[in-house]
Image (cartoon, rainbow, N blue to C red; front, side):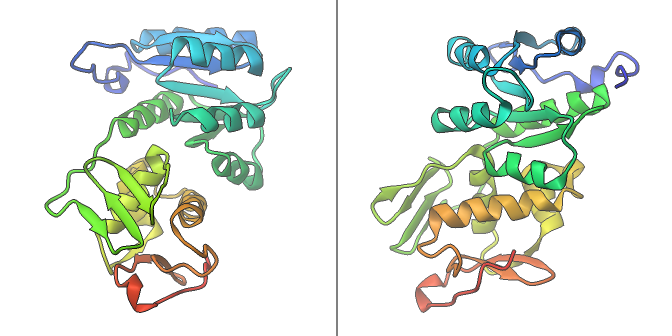
Length: 259
């Protein structure tokens, strides 16, 4: 790991109108790393809380209500996989997994369980700070759309202003990242969108090479909004190119879910 260069002025999180300092909860059992992270995060203006095991981390998450969690996988009592799953059952706060696991399958597993980002150890402190800033920025994002702001074909309803999503009469709960991805599709009906374009619009330009993020989150969306996720009506795969949102779903156009 390396310390950020210079003063890091370009990395400081923009203050909200209430001058609220974003709260970061670190769940990590390496006390030396916790001290290093705390020093750098507080230097950037964040309020930092920390826990050395998963159970204590969950307690603090409910008590302190952080704006973002930095989550290590290999922790005592309850590991990061279990913590991530528990957090996702009750909250959509951004989760950045921080671990020594470098296998792509571990990254996909973390994203599949609801993590928003994944950074492998050893890491560069400046990159960590940039990723935290990006996650916090996206968690406060609201889509700017021109009228109409609602997609409704009788089977699927998506309101881009209220963020309400329904499949039939059933309300669909989406994480902020899932909603941003769905909103991007709805704002571009019928267009074939490359994975690189989706990454730049939903995650940010710094993520244009993380193509597996799109694959994982398209799978999430299909499970939540499609009647038959393996034969989707709405989010269609254009093999070798990307994906297309098919608003003419009522016509019966379908595609196999080849991601």
